Length: 490
Image 1 (cartoon, one colour):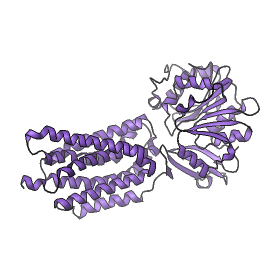
Image 2 (tube, rainbow, N blue to C red; image 1 turned 30 degrees about the vertical axis):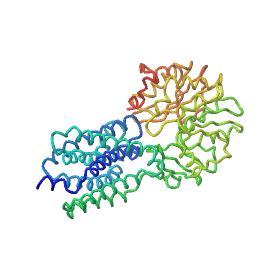
Image 3 (cartoon, rainbow, N blue to C red; image 1 turned 60 degrees about the horizontal axis):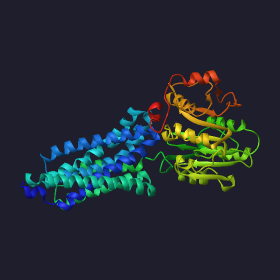
Image 4 (cartoon, rainbow, N blue to C red; image 1 turned 90 degrees about the horizontal axis):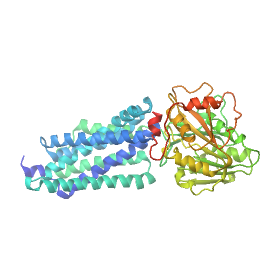
């Protein structure tokens, strides 16, 4: 085969486009991987670290293998095959995540296993196209630098376009699974185009069958989400579908990623089905009678602000909710109405804090856990100082945390609260904290923390000595400069 034969069918402009496009699509897959994996391993710094590391490994592997193969075989046919099979592997990532995900726990090892199972192969195959194109483009040693620079620039430009386009545009308008299916289809069609225009031999029957199988499986495996928002995999499940002993006709549960986050009764806003929400509600009962001024950091299913509006008529509830689509879901499926008289502000809660009035609240409720992770920037001393500013003189701060085992995050969080507030409290499960993560309620106040009236089965409030032992020797104080919340949780 002559040099002219080897380059036939792949123009310089098409070469540049292919390098940019495949680099961009690798970044599209990387960003979407976090959304697809969230229902099983949560969303945290460790999730993104595992995904980025896995994709980088795939890029390195693909570049090495792709370059070696390009020296031995026809690069044009290799490029067509990489596009064709890369599309099939992209489709196959959907059933792999759905099958492998439920078998894993959270944590760094599980994250890497899931990411590698689903996304290492497509990232590697697509990343092999760059050196294959370089093999075609380099006609002589005198122009090596220019060719490599041109291809590197195209690859980086494509990666930037894939990153910005996915994060700012695609996810805002299309479901994640639809984007993955579209990426796979685009790659398969591009592969077929290169096969046809270059005159190279087409894939054989088994190869075509394998890609068709990936497409069918990818299309048929159902999503674990009813709705995918910008931040969560969301399901709303009626009591009748949860096989509970005493289903309520109006009962609905909100599932965010892998955790049941809230429950509402469409007919009775005073019914609280979830233990930790009842504990947060106990904090409202400790406040003086009459209307309350309450700030909720995290809205979720809005069961608690609706409860407060019902049991304390005239109360004001300001709710800071990150996800505006969750607000829509609460209105469409969880009975939230304008009659609940809530002041709902969407976006990052921290950006709203300085807008709120000093001494403006009797009670602040921190319930911003997202699945199995916590927004670290809402855990720090700096934020707790803002919370203290917002509370009235006798105001109370209660915070839901989820931890277990050594309980390092919960202890560090209470230790951090102690840097700002004069008295602290903790409500644990009746049987204490075991190896499994459980909801715990942290309490802070400038003044004595009240003793809450708690149903015997819901939890136990620690006394002062027990609270001191709870913190123990953890020593960590979370700050804007050092807040390893995800690492403490694992």
